[in-house]
Length: 225
Ligand code: CDP
Ligand code: CDP
Image (cartoon, rainbow, N blue to C red):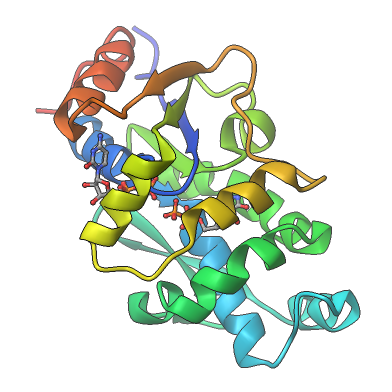
């Protein structure tokens, strides 16, 4: 028998399409490391805002980025980004200011370049912590970060339903505007890459989505005990 499989699972989709909830459930079911790359773009955005950078001023953004030291902390089954040894608190990365600014910073090529190798390196973090795989979610995971991932899923849901889900969480967030910016940017736009398994969750409950995705993965790896 060879060594057990280590699986790479990519999940992409628009805001509030169910990526994080699905990825979290998969990480439990299969003992994968869960990486929410949206939280990485949010953490970098919070730090850039803290240092007074504006998305229009690429020179300042670039110089702040050069000095950011990125690390990773593993908490349970979830990877958290450290910036200069500090994990940016949830309340800060989900703040209305970050909601409004993140897609503008995420469209800057230097920001994406800063995160590219870091995100790919999360597979090594998962292996080093003896996870059976990595489930990474975002906008460009199946298209740019891991185009040869073992599984690539793309979650769709009607924008009205997605806005309802976010509002139910009590968040101030213009998801339609973020989707527009994320889909229209030149570098790594939000798109369903050819070959990804497309799931429309508008009329599916979260457990139904998780079961559908898990059934595909279970053809390669049995759920963890
Ligand atoms: O949770 P939600 O789907 O609302 O957003 P998120 O996943 O936290 O991502 C926040 C923002 O980060 C997105 O609107 C994108 O602008 C950016 N992002 C990106 O450009 N590429 C990724 N792989 C992940 C997030
Ligand atoms: O990560 P992303 O922004 O794509 O979405 P999420 O944070 O996983 O899901 C947003 C909200 O929608 C959460 O409160 C989920 O419980 C809910 N949801 C749902 O009601 N039905 C689904 N099929 C998927 C998610």
